Length: 282
Image (tube, rainbow, N blue to C red):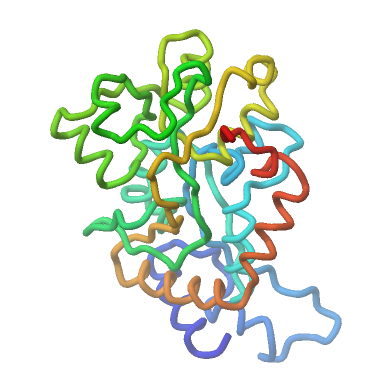
């Protein structure tokens, strides 16, 4: 890793954010009189927070036996490429964001959409994209309608989630009506039981939920995904806007450039529960 890794390790240790015992970072595992037969030193750990948002991030406690989410796999690979091990702690979304700013164990959270970056966030390079759109009742025939035409339709959203700048601006201005729930599955259930006609959702999340949740799968033919006019959203790690956060972001971005994100993404969805079973209308 060279000098950059050692400087980062020193910064993280100063802040108590790196596993102790490796004051020079991964470079310390070599040399310094280590015995030839000694066990390899464990990689220093970086901790981030996230939410349960399959297939991008998956809390194993809520999904026993499930593989990690796509974004966690990509983030782990990027950190591993520069000699660090990622550990992710999962919380409800708004708590995950709050803890990443207040709890000294953490230096950030993921995934976060761009272009939403502010004084509270240093955005990494992209982990990939989120194809955002609307889940709709198939019999509502909303496909192709503009946001202006949807002004009289109550649209389901998830508390704490960012959508698109235009959509969120219209909500703030009172030009769109929304109903807030705690997760995407609840919005899909409201669609099934005619309590909503549309809800903002990522296409891959919708497909995953319809593939893996029995009570939703039984009604999958009643729902369609409408890409609407929402552009794909890039996903990032949000690092703390501190010297430590900036150093870690720089190293993480180096790791992202050393891995093949497109190949990891394609392999993930080929393995199942991805975007291959389309829920779009034809």
